[in-house]
Length: 417
Image (cartoon, rainbow, N blue to C red; front, side):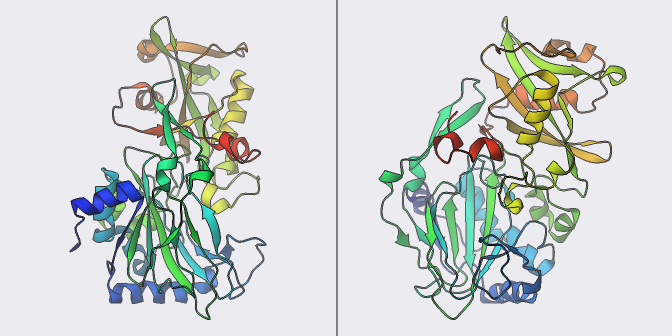
């Protein structure tokens, strides 16, 4: 059971400074259990985030165990550790949902990472507007092995801007010139660093003769789903967790994400309408459909596939442009639904201005009040529409983009439209 409770001062420090350290939150036995399990699996650390990507352990690089590779008891327990989940729940103000489980092993002479902020509107792990980074070092992050530096109050440089649709928020890019001095969090083995998702941080090079090992997991508040969509966990991960850990997985399935559809709404003469597409014998459905392997890997845009899997905005936007003649600048995750033998990821969007293009034949605006009278072969049509256009007070949604929409211009385009 958890024996560390956050005080009022702890919570205020996190809100003001953007981070909080709980000393010796993870026991020596638990650290040994994690370290032994990770070291035993070094041969499976085939993925390196560093470039070039042809490194072989122990060549200097950032070796990563992530995604669904950690589904075993000696690794899974930390994702549902009561101290971790209790602290994250208090800081987020809602039940936490696991968006990333990541272990990094950095051999001697690894170059480290430069100062950055992990808010990225195209990534499932970084596109929530209320999420927390939990960092557990399995060695002392001292000056030689590489400390973890944070910039206090830097999370406040990102500003949320209410969207014209009244449902989503945009994010204004931070002014990097206002970044203050970075400080050493002096993390030691078994400490727990709780880092606000928008706090800037960096890790200097490993100048020691030791491995730098740590767990870097991420949790989003249940009421702040990632705009790009959640990472889909395997059933093996689900089965490796207890009841509380299972509740922390937003989506788990061994079915592939092979389809995507869009709930696009607008106001017309005071009524809410949604755009539907006529698929002939099956009736009316949401625009979109089969996207194939785009659902199980990142699009070919030079990004690291481990972090971008599940963002179907680019593939869905291309499909909707072909079907409807509408080109959208953003979408926001709604939910995942079973469709035939695969999963369908549904996004939402809103037109706040009249489009300059005429709709293609076979697509029409339909009043929400008439949905029960139409014929549709889509089993989740009304449920998905209700989740997007219904009264979802308290849900904080961001504006997600595809990788291609963000990366051609590194700067403001990643944030506000």
